[in-house]
Length: 289
Image 1 (cartoon, one colour):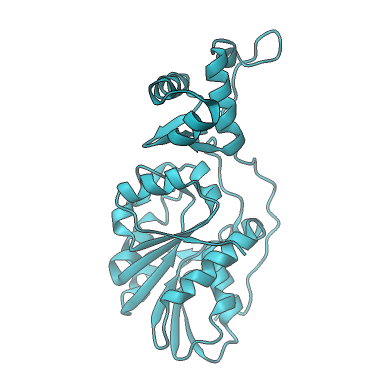
Image 2 (spheres, helix red, strand yellow):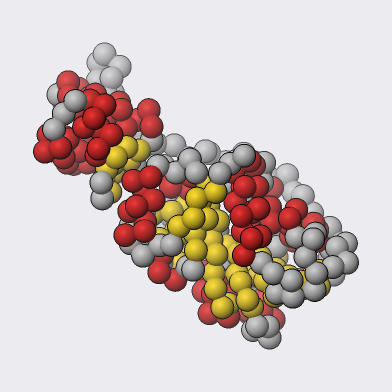
């Protein structure tokens, strides 16, 4: 068993950014220059909140529902907002590669720990659980110390490093081909080893959340592995902080209906929660305290 992970120096990668808009001669965007005063107010309202429900827009800007709908349609046509049932949000960030997992593990820590604490409420002594790689799921390790006779399967070297000295946990590193940036393993060996176990609960996450389509990823290499993990598990619990809603991916990793429960921090706008629920997602909000 590998005793410790190798922390590689990885060059900085570009952060997710909003799509760049063309500038006019006065420094404003050409799209904004073509907007009416009311449309600009609605756009600015959504910008300051990242997303907004239709009722909020009507109430705070003193406009009728029909007017608000027309404005949102016009803004969406210009690709300035993305509509969802009952409101609109800023368009997802440009699809840039994720930061290495070691870097991501330092971001949104309060929210990730709150999600992990809530996730442990779905574990009982004697369970066999699967912790997939990623900075959010890794946070569960800090809350597993009080469980007994727990079997933990993982493809994550970071999870292995945190749990390897816990005498109350039987830790199974699934092996396979090493992905240094994600500090995890993948491939047919990983899949074959997992298939020998009856998994009570799989805990997982994703690069982004699309409120209409589900959990998004760019990692085509790991898609077959995670799909197989899902098939082997009695239930699947996903964890995601609210920033995932403003990121996108190239492919759908899981549909909402395939996940037993999605744990979100309570900074997620309620209209987005309702839209995901209407699209078949069971959602539980976790206070970030």
